[in-house]
Image (cartoon, rainbow, N blue to C red; front, side):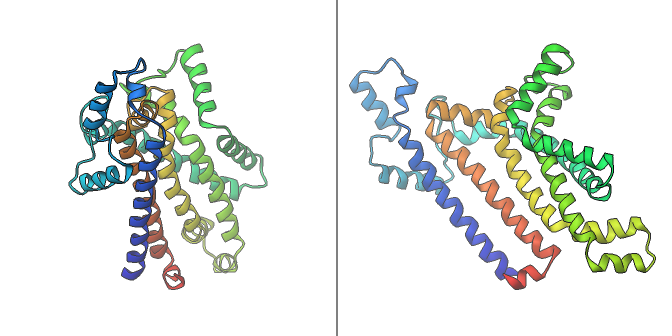
Length: 306
């Protein structure tokens, strides 16, 4: 068990480091940030002074070594535009993102798993087809189309719900639905597929032959044995929620790290951009690491095969 976890964790460290190198180089390929900060241009002596101040006058290799040295000291750099620590900026905005992602994740589970069960157990009925049709639409329609449609209907025409900000509980409804739509649809589809596969197994017929109640057969035997594919999807949904916040927060003017990240890209704010990508990548690989560990807990045979 410990050897399995250690090997997987080693992959996490290597992956994060590879992302760190990639984003550092890619950020500098976008061009000089002073061109965006000062679109009208600067005198050569002033531009050189700012490049020296930000450490951008040095070769990329030296910049990278200095960046790693600062990271080792817990210094993630200062924003080029706002002149304050990027960690402080993300700390201020991450709460709003986590609240939105948490609401969307809860909605995804509460709707996705029951919909998948209905789709599997009632697959030959109208309600089963209707549920999976809704799931298909939620999976197929892009985020921004759902977001703009909800804003247009409930915000602009009906005036029922606010479409920007996060001041009240009503502000959470539209972005939560938008962010959860693709997730609960994906969970529903995979729950249905996995449950149908388990229902066709021999041990299910044995459980019914013993005279067990159908409720016990479904929830104790079928649902539990169909959890591994669903756990995989749940892990991916967490990362998708964080990444999806980049689009959703921009559309709904949600004051979270997604909007902060988009602003850093547009303004070529290297420290803010680098810290954001590293955070997103770390979340993704750690969630996948936890999913691997959950595999072993649910089915110990996976550890043996690994």
